[in-house]
Amino acid sequence: ELDCLLLRVRTYIMANTSDIKNGLCINLKDGLWQVIEFLHVKPGKGPAFVRTKLRNLSTGRVVDNTFNAGVKIDVVRIETRNYQYLYNDDMGYHFMNAETYEQVPIGKELIDSPQFLKDGLDCQIMFHADEELALSVEIPPHVEAEVTYTEPGLKGDTATNTMKPATIDT
Image 1 (tube, rainbow, N blue to C red):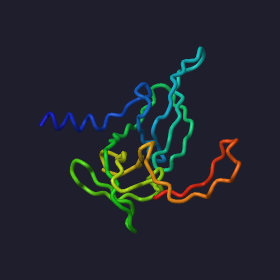
Image 2: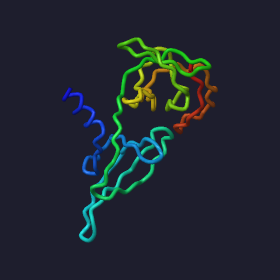
Image 3: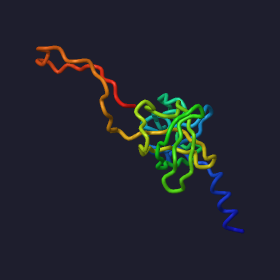
Image 4: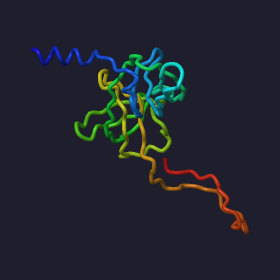
């Protein structure tokens, strides 16, 4: 009974600006934000403050924000899990948890590059741990793809490193 009470008390304790670190997710007035960079500043005159660069988890927008020292912040628990891409249909893109075989449909707007998804590709999905809500999907930085079509090169155009558009199998 006492352990349950302590657990409830811990979930409602808010952190302050000294707990800010890279990767920390916080809840501000207009959504969930992730700390990209931070800097504790202690000027000779005036109170200390923390300069941060925050990325909105729903829109991807990056903003600068300054917190006064000692201000309470609402920390959000985020979990990153491995999922495997299966297929997409009118309900969204379907991913499967490799451990529990649970399938999750996710909207196209949460995926960073949906045009490069291939069947069986392992991805990282970021979840809001308390609400079990998917926040974003990151595909691996390198994906193997087969070039299906490209324009033929021009004769004699090998002196410069020119690029040409290509169509891949996805």
